[in-house]
Amino acid sequence: MSVNIEVGRAIQFEPFWAWLKQHMNCILRAGTSEAILYDHESLHWQLEEDPDGNPNAILVLGKVVIAELIIEANEILFVQITPDKSGEEPQYLFELFGGPREEPYPLYHFVLTHGFEGEEASAHPPALKH
Image 1 (cartoon, rainbow, N blue to C red):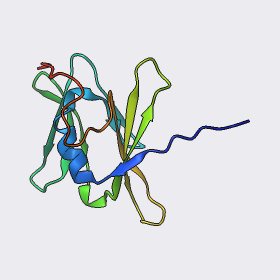
Image 2 (image 1 turned 60 degrees about the vertical axis):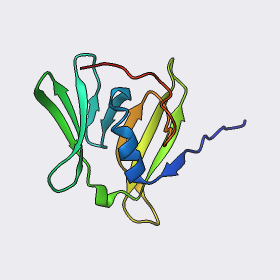
Image 3 (image 1 turned 120 degrees about the horizontal axis):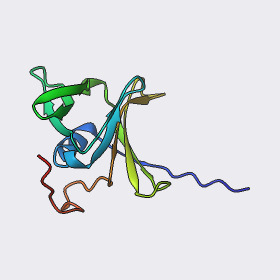
Image 4 (image 1 turned 60 degrees about the horizontal axis):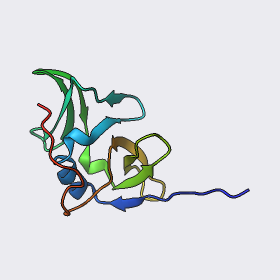
């Protein structure tokens, strides 16, 4: 019996966050091991930094904040990207790892509709959601 293991690629948090801010409408869900925020057609995401510089993923209904994920950026060692093609539509898991360098573990995660393109042009046309 053979087993296929798909290994993800790792990037630094800063380029990931800058890229993610350009792809807010591609987020399907985000969370931690304790809570998950799910996207919905009536909700939209806002990605910004608080006064202390911590990145925030905010889920909004109209003008009402429904939930907020505050990321302690100084705890993030790297972001690992893993494609998940098991469903009808491909999804990409972005895990933000922290902890000791010898044994890092995922602190936060984002699931998006596509992978990381870096500085390249977007793989999809811009969409109006608001």
